[in-house]
Length: 257
Image (cartoon, rainbow, N blue to C red; front, side, top):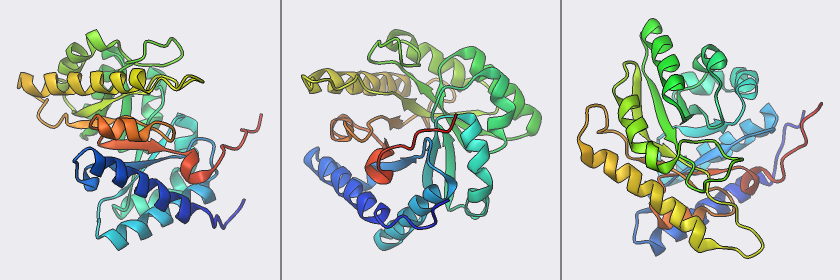
């Protein structure tokens, strides 16, 4: 397992520069947009190198908020949890599940995650709520919305997202903090208008839920959208979190079979 990843600090700094430039171009404060380290298929040592680089960068910027780390798969989140445990306990790292969650894995994820950013059904939300109530804890959740309509992507349809969010917000043990999406694929034609329109649609859903004044919706301000290839478009449309993996860690390793 590698212990040194010398390119990560420079690549992470470059990502922060991209985010800051995009925010300023949109008339926003760069501190409004956080970078979540998407660590899919990366080994624990590489993840720790990314976290260390993020902590150093945050210290230089006077930012004492925890580093956000996101895993797509429950089994990877659980496997890497011991390596991050001390930093999590110290409030320096916050682990999120950003991939699809099956109800039968709720118990596993709640043992290690501070937030589930991929709630896409009321049934899943209820399963999380029951377990959180039983354990006497609160869990931050985002509602995942499929703004592109692509069958390969998870998430509730935009037309149904506000209703789901209101139902989720009313469940005990859950704190609705916002919405998440994966933008439309940027193909050879680079249809940036289509991608940006999807991000704008998510912002509109968020704004409608906030404006509803419904119980439990007051904290639903986060917009987790934008990744390595489209983060500038997401920031222009109001992203508060961008999920970045390859731009920080390089190409993903091929998982062992």
